[in-house]
Image 1 (cartoon, helix red, strand yellow):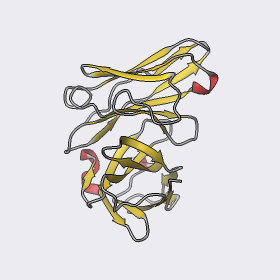
Image 2: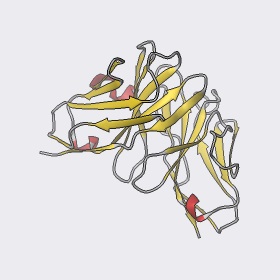
Image 3: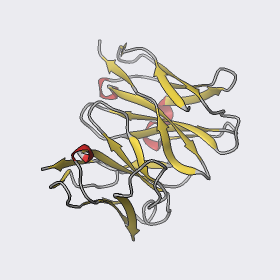
Image 4: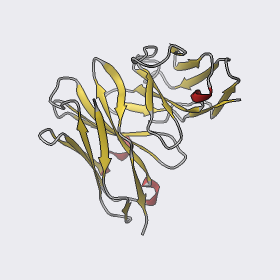
Length: 111
Length: 121
């Protein structure tokens, strides 16, 4: 099972928006709606920010939103804040044989 | 409050077996839908899902590592154990355990702090 493809980096100025793509296949991203996104600050554990494509856990700001089209999922961070500077990973369910696959990760820089 | 904490050796030698323990609190692995996964992250690299154990003791493994992994649980101790055989320097990573609640958050909603494992002779 290959990792999902994400751009290595993305950036934006405070207040702007940034969108990160996560491309998989018709067997994972394109088939199931179990897409989640994680934020990871340096030397910290990942934190769940989006689950089931577009749902936010309680406590996650509505600046974070998710969507999916075909084999590509996307995370948008609106109104960028300095604390949004972190690595972001997508994850998809890929079926019972090899259930979960992560993305390659995207480093978001707030300029 | 839900917490998970990983423990195990910081250093293992090549060819040895690594045994990691995830001790959790605030939930029960006897609860329908509850699962615990192991996930690792080599230095400077991406996350990689390794294995999952479910409330009914169903187990699933990464296809690429399946022959080397064994996951088990001790619900009386609130622990999940991962064993990885034949360790190699490429297995050097931070190893995390994380909870999932199937049907509630079908995602890894709570993570442990991680434990760093170095494979070196």
